[in-house]
Image 1 (tube, rainbow, N blue to C red):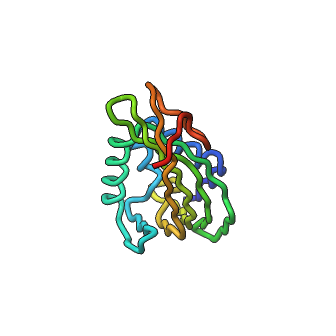
Image 2 (image 1 turned 120 degrees about the horizontal axis):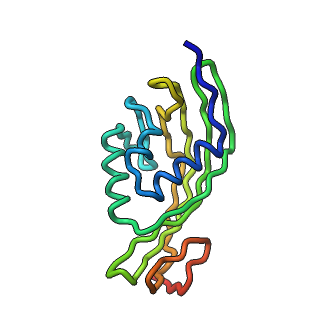
Image 3 (image 1 turned 90 degrees about the vertical axis):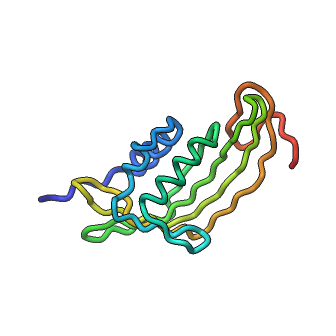
Length: 155
């Protein structure tokens, strides 16, 4: 059986953002292989079930999220592709429908893709660095995503 072509960076990362922003847990998790090993920034390694639980919790708690991804490097071997990616973005949690707290994040990680069940999926993640910082509060019906949230107060 031949290996399917490796999807472009835009296809991979746009799909991930689209699924996450639509709160499509099954779609988002379909990017990961059943035998996933995900090493978090704190050194703890979790499996697909644990990651699924964490992402489900995020989708329940967060009102909005967006990020950009930049591929620093990509190495291709016979049966795998390893890429180092930097992601920058913002997460927003909402309380009482009008108070929005935002956090900026910067994550750098190594992602290994292999063909599983006939398509490319992530089999290993190693979060190399992760920084999360307070991006302030917003007030209003809908949070604003972007580099500078509207009506921001320190805190």
